[in-house]
Amino acid sequence: MSKQISKDNREYWLKKLSDKFSDKRQAIESLHQVEINEQSQKNFPIFKKRLGIEKDLLNYLKVEKDFNDYSKNHQRRLDEKREKVMKFFSKVRDKLKSWAETRKSWNEYDIPKYDYESKLFDLSDRVENFLKHTCKTETKEAFYKSKKGKEIQTLDELEEKATDLLHSDMIGSEVLSQISMIAKQTNINMTIPQNTLKELPSK
Image (cartoon, rainbow, N blue to C red; front, side):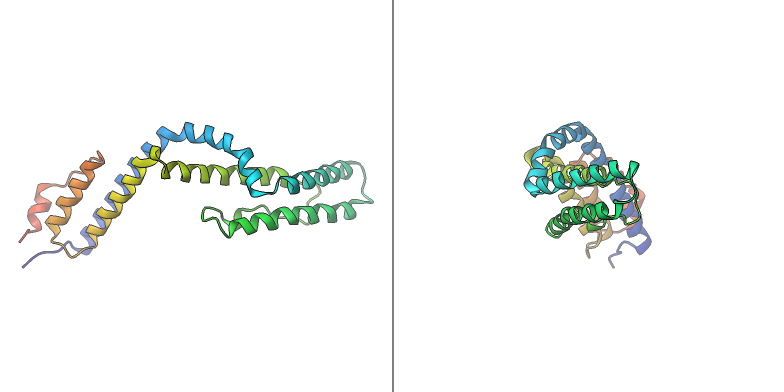
């Protein structure tokens, strides 16, 4: 009677498999990090222009600066200027929220929010940081979908294949042997002890 991998044994190999592929993925990504950072900086002006919010940001920056300057010296017109800040920032945020609906890598909750109690605003910096982060994320995703990112694509495909094997109905020894062969294709060192294979009969 064929012996399948036990639940505990399967969980052990799933974790080991995930850790090994994660380490390999991080090693590959670290090799390309400098290039991705440089490309992200080059892409950023075009990225903001493509989103169509440059005019809105410029309008917002004017009222933010006006508000901050005024707040330092005068109090009597703060409410009026606060309304302007909220109005123009709302246009920026609404547009970003609209973009977030169509972009998987964007998280709507990361988009900066208007603070009704703030005395001085830093929304422009927070929006800029948010845009830089999302631009870098999209640049990274595009990079790894290109020919230069083929190694990560292959790694993802092989990890999926190995994970599928662990959840298959194949005999345990065959599963671990095939996982070992898959690991070799990625130059991942995953040694499966011979006594483990012996304990999982192939027939």
